[in-house]
Length: 495
Ligand SMILES: *[C@@H]1O[C@H](CO)[C@@H](O)[C@H](O)[C@H]1NC(C)=O
Image (cartoon, rainbow, N blue to C red; front, side, top):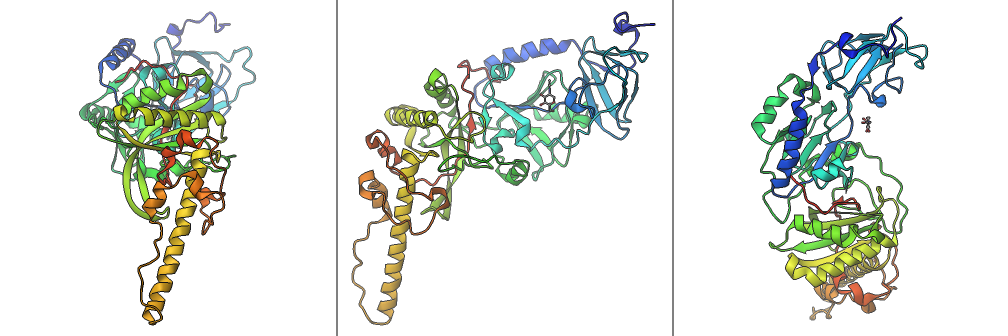
């Protein structure tokens, strides 16, 4: 009776539809080399799910089929399945439209029903892979460099920026197959480049050609398709991600964790509240997002003491709100979001300290860096966040007083009760901004009404001098950013 060990895969291949060329390794090598030469800019976004034969999560039985199992691909399913190595099967039914991509040396061998340790054998069905959506932020990983991607040094990104931005390089893992639903509100989904099986598509024509190939049609489906647009970002100060139009789609697949901190923050581009810190920077034309990102890594993430802090920096469009609630205009700013660990569920003093380091750096080197102003919010309720909250509360209070006085004045004036004198010198908003020093405000101001973001007046900073100035401007920010892995490597390999 033949045993598995005695069988050579070369003699018993049941199927060999599509063999993976050995050229791939060379291509990968070339890609890494090329990436050393190209100018810096984007992040890498890697698709997580795969439709590999050898991934247990792809089988209804929860493990990869073994020699006594009957392997079943539903007839109507469109699948591209990567087969990594030699698998023994009893029997296999294939879909009408699909492909099996055999890695070098991969094959199926006939078990003749014998596979010690496999058990009685079942029908193992390949799971449905239709549901994996491009705009699901949980299905992507971000890395700053190609090198980081290989070394699993991933970034943490706000949800909108977890999904590939138009200036990003999209990577589907080598030695894997996938199927992604690219349904979008937009006609197309622009990205800078797409790498599939080690082959990098960096022109619109080469990728659209690939899309119309057999593999392309099996891998990408849905109402839109990705379009490679190499010149996605030519602005050294950075580019916005461009996913805001699909925000609803993105947030629909996110379940927000419960956050345990005093003043949860709402980063722009994120679907959930986070605990941590947001540093907001006003920048000039001299600012360079790439080099600033590198700088932050040295400033914060490469310090062993900040081991667990994750930080990310990006340009976002912040809606300016007059006095916190009247939408006015939107303005670009650079946002640095710092969280503890992966999820941003908890606050930590480490995050606060790192944010203060960043503020101090921005203040002392702002001229060289192209940073014109910097302020921060802390979810711990300490310092910056608390101060901003009190300032906002104070301004709202003043506004209400002004409105009431004006209303009363106009009313009385109309009735002829009073002739309108020059109004008492009310502090103007700008003077409140300038005088937002801690001492002026104290902790007893009436907030006028509850601002959900700052519902509790908080402690004054223990060291006002350290960052008092930086918190001068009122910022009710909703910031959004990605978070860089602390173990980040300073070498910048980009493509
Ligand atoms: C298997 O697939 C799951 C989900 O698609 C993915 O998270 C995991 O990384 C894959 N496992 C391997 C070993 O690639």
